[in-house]
Length: 546
Ligand SMILES: [Zn+2]
Image (cartoon, rainbow, N blue to C red):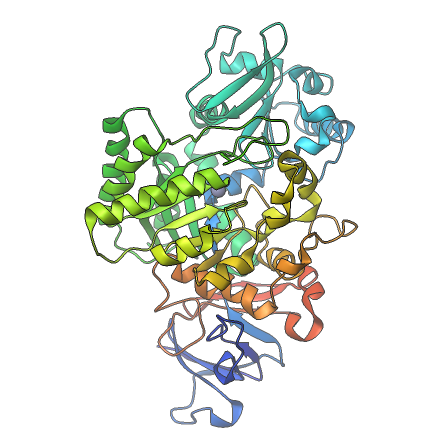
């Protein structure tokens, strides 16, 4: 096995920075890697001289830190999104229309156009219609996923391709938005987007498309310094694509992927439990550290931007949304998954949804008794003040995405809540203070996947999308060592990997990155310009900047 000594480095080990304490073990100057594992970490003066390393790399004083683990991604979907019309920085309807026209001109043979990332803020009155797309592109179906992927906006040809007519009923947990005359307006909410538009996309997407998407996603992550991801939406198609990617790489993906099997509420206990059984079967068959099924994902509610997140108290317009998983249907699924040793990841954005998530987990603990478990709640954009302590008590991880708090996309979020709740948006220090494990991710492609930009938002509460927008809630910004710790050490620990990766320590996996800037020295603002110079996974260089 080859040994490599990295010297003359500023080594941030992510060890013992949990409570913001920066002690001697947090920093080092040299790291010795033996094969795929870190053998030694320490000061330059203490580098072991016998035996001599096979290779010595002088890092010229640059920052060496653990690779990022993105604790919440949709890997194949993210790879697909990278090839679609990007609308996340289109601020107005004319801008959106202009991009669709250019996409149409650039692909005269296209059979359809798929775009992504539009914001309700960018559409007049926050009410997208089919006609608005038709003004730009009307001669072929156009499907536009919203920034948060909880709504899909389609044109008239798109509605026709999906077979939606005025007689099509709303699916359970979703809405085909209608105009005053009762016709579908072109906006599909929640399960109307996923079960109609996405199901259509699944039918027309080939395995070659999915393979290309998987490769694109993995390459992009490696270039962003991400050495592991937690996939939040595995289904038969996506898992098969990742298995094929793994086979192309000799059984070892270039990054570590642990995934959650998406369990949908079919409105019937037996059909729901059958999905848990499938996840358990896949988890039992996962033998590799590189690609594992570790749990189930449940989407309990929607999003605040579309007023589909389940709140204890109504939105500013008086409306509210019910949970996609009411407690009586959720509980049997959570109890069964817990009994099967699966990790349960529950998407809960509104405070009522996180209440329900924790009620179901408490019931599972009561039924299944004491056993090792580490469940998690995803997003927690607005949770009740007592929720962090309740999560800490139950050993539930808070999986949160700093990029979702970007001030550039905050105005609509705040307007929908419209009261003092806005002041407790994404309050990460509350989770730290309560002693809950806090794991950071990006939820790409609902937000940009770039790990360093995510850390910029985490450490400044300023916008990585638009530097002109002032910071919101700067009191919740985290010191760099804490933000990086949540995105490396804690993200790895969130899936039970805390004893072997996510830190730079002897015996840990040699998953390392080198940055061209040192944000500890240059300040958090430098995270926006910082680039990953090299990404090393299991001791092997997997990405190197030109
Ligand atoms: Zn997600």
